[in-house]
Structures are given as structure tokens and as C-alpha cells.
Length: 545
Image (cartoon, rainbow, N blue to C red; front, side):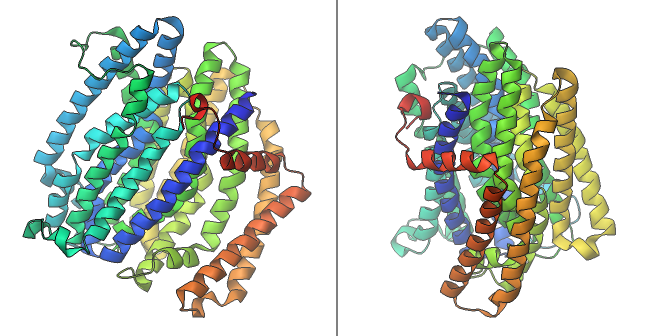
């Protein structure tokens, strides 16, 4: 099978599983919105989960894999299998000890952790509930980190399905606990102090992260992993090399999540309207439906492929792999950005405007979604170009560029808050992150080109130009459909869902129709991706089912 075929096959499996997870994630967020709306309790839950979520998404979406997979692949290629697993076991237990210490510190210093969010003098709510929720949720970083490391081990064997399914169990746990809150016999088992929806949801988060790790253990055991603690391993050269790579990759791969964390801090400013924290969170969750389903899926698959290509001295093949990945992901993210920008309000209204999530909450969230969607192509492109650096065991350059992007985000956030708040309101943190993402990608592209030569920019210009034409046609259709549909006057949910579905179908149909007229190569590749997603019967060694 060609490299392109392998990437499409594995990415289709991850995308399918991730899409299921995103749908469950929507149901999870809808349950949270239904129970808490954009109230101070909702903001408290999101603040308490923000740092663990930051760690979960930074590790699960590549930072641990970026450090571990190239080293582990080299062990598997050059040494006996037993030595490779011994290295993996030492890394596992060193990571477990570090995570346990961090979890304990997060519990003990819960007040100081939540205090980070009051740097800009927030007076919107009393954060006592957030401190209590943080003590429940923070231990989840222990299971999150181990789950991400287990996923990196399985990905090294081109097993992608089982690690991707972990988020399904995470979402199911939170949904189950949200439903349990309505079941009085279960609530009767809890102490009075815990009988509120925010606390019950926090317990669901902790339980969900436990399942994320546990479901991967049997697959690791079958491939040779032993979980018995090894001898003290801080002097092991392989472990030390992993540690040297881990720090920079954790920052470089997670700069998007760090910027979201910075956005949250600015969203707690006393100038921001109440509910700004929740609106940014919900807007990001809508974004993740696209970003997580496709960009993360493809970036997860190409890292082992690029590592093997570079180890074999096939630099040009690695560049072609990147070019293909960028084209197929851009073919999806560019129209997705257009759709989210123009149809943002109907999307948020249909998905979340229920219970305590009122019309005012929809307006806040739609405003944040507008500015996050502007940066969607850049967010996706960063996830594709970073693995090229990590394949060469270079985690320092993305980290350094990520630091520049973080500084850019902070400066823009401050400038927008002071000078443009009247026009941007709660959308200013989202716009700052989007602009910082474009800055980040451009620098990553320039630095890699200087070091390793051209990346086929001219070859990419034509397909990207065609996508822009297709997206422009789609934008006109979306605008016309929204203007003449009378959506704002419809109050019945079923009619809203039907009308939104029709508007999306028309817009997407125009995009694909123009792509067919322009003979976009990506259209055929996308159909191949969908066909492979329907046939999730590939060999277990390739996709991990």
C-alpha cells in the first residue's frame, strides 16, 4: 500500500472514532449547558477543568508522542524487542511519579491555582466553588498523562483506533454522571455538600479520565508491555533523552492550548460580560468538531510515517507527505471556517440554546466562535507542520516559535482589551489566538524551509487557490440561505434543526460542486477517506481495532 493510502486508511479510522467522540462531546457540553448555562457555577467548573484540560489536550494531541515515538521506533528497529519495552516501562513509571506529584500539588494548592484567573481583577463571581471543584478534578491529570503515553506506545505499532476511542469513554462518563444528578436514589448516596450539578460533573470528569487509560492497558499487555515497576531509571540514557525532548515538545505542541488558557485569563477581566469564560469554552468545543476530527487525526498518523521516512533518509518523501496532509486537511478546514463564520448563530442556537443556556448565551458564544473560526486553517496547519520537526528529534525550534506566538497572543489580548473592547467584546481573546496561530505557522514554515529546503510551495499554491474559489462560492450560498431563510423567526427546535441542516447541505453542495468543476484532486482523496471510514475492517495491526 502507498504512503498516501496508509495515511488515508489510518486517518479515516481515527476520524470516524473521533467524530463519534465529538458528537458525544457535544451531548456532554449540552448537558453541562442545560444544567448550568453560562452561570457563575458553569464558569467555576470550566475554570477548575481548564488546567487539567490543557494538560489532557496537550499530551493527547501529540506532545508525548512527539518525544516518545521517534525514540521508541528507533529502539524497535535497532534493538531486541525486550529492550524496547524495558525503555517504555522506565518512561512509564518516571512519568507516573512526576504526574502523581503534580496532581498532589494541584490539590494542595487549589486556591493558588484558581487565583491565576483573577490576575485581571475579576469581580464576576465568587470562586470558592471553583476551588472545591479543582480539588476533585486535578487528580485526573495522572490518568490523562498515562493515557497519552499509552497511546504513543500503541501509535508506534500503527495502532490508532483504541487510543482514539478513549475520549468516547471520557465523554460517556460525564454524560452518565449528568444524568445521575437527576436520579434521586443515586444522589442520596452523596453528602449534602456534593449535591449540586457542578460537583457531580466534576466527579464524572475524574472517572472518565481513569477509563481513558484503562481501556488501552490490555492492548499494551498483548504487545509485550509489563507494568511492574523497574529499577530506578533516572540515569538511563534513553529516558534522559526522552526528558530532554519532552519539555520543549510539551510547550511547542501545546501552544494552542496554552493560548486558550491565556484567553481564559483575559476573559475573567472585570470588563468582560458575565459568561465570557463559558462562551469561549463552548465556541472552542464547536471548533474542535472539525479540528479534532480531521487535523488531529491526520497529524497523529503522519508522525510515525515521517519518523520512519526521515530515519531511512527519505527527506523528500517526508516533504511530500506533509504536502499531501496539508492539502487534504485544508480542503476540509477552509470551508468549515466559512460555514462557522456565516452560520455561527444558527449553529450555536440549535446545539446549545436549551435550559439555562439562553439567547444571551447564544450571542456571546456566536461572537467568540466568529473569531476562533477565522484561525481554523492556521490551527490545523500547525498540527501538520510540527511533526516534521519532531520526526527530526527537533522539539526546541517549535517550542521557541511557540514562545513567540504566545507573546504575540498576550500582547494582542491586552491591546484588544484596552483599545478595541467596544467592537470585539468577549471575542477579543479568540481573535488574539487566531492571529497568533497564523504568526506561529508562518514562522514554522519559514524556519523549516531555511533548514531543509523548499516544501513545494508553488505546487501547493494552485490547489489552495482552487479551494479559495470553492469557499467563496460556498460563502455566497451560506449568506443567501441565511438571509432569506427567516431562521431568526422560527421558535420550534425541530424546524430549526431542519432548516440549519438544509442550509449546511446547500452550502457544502455548492463547495463540492465547484470543486468538481475545477477538478480538485482533493475531492477524490476525500471520497477515498470517506470510503475507508465506512469500511473499518482493516487489519488490527494497522488501525488497532
